[in-house]
Image (cartoon, rainbow, N blue to C red; front, side, top):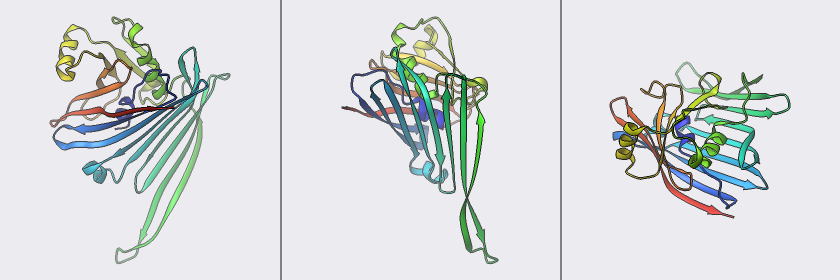
Length: 260
């Protein structure tokens, strides 16, 4: 689910220093799956993007209280985001994993520090819990490729310039945080046939993008998402079509506000 939560927060440059959006994620006949609250702050050409996503309702029960957090921080140069730090944290009631990526532009290297915690429980002979403790493991490594974008800064940069992009080109980006080999993510604008289909789904005249994540999500082999981007550059709705037999996974912006 993590890539869906991330894609449901796409933004453009605004004069306000801080803006916040809340997205609801739902799945066909099962209704609401989760909620993602997002915050973008800009201060003296330094940006931070913070996303807190959590499962809700029945999905919360099935996922053992799953919570995910994504954080990106970096510089704005010539109105473009350049990531310096990217953090992912995934947890539930029994385990937690944090990944901290730091960018070294001089050495063209991204360093990864990982911390994993797991709740280990022992039981007595009559199956009663006798002891519980958290086991921690750490590791350090270098990412296999260098890029200036993590998956949050990338989508900001794309939607910020969406009005000037060539509608006939298929774009490919190398992105930290994407699971595909070498972090590859693809975008393209819909052709005439695709546009007619998307207009029937979204029922608006906003710009549309088709994003290929190059990784399987549920029954979608390549993880292809349809995204509607409003005039402010925000993703106001995204759809992963025909997941298994139960319908679509949909993310929709339900609340948006700005503050200084």
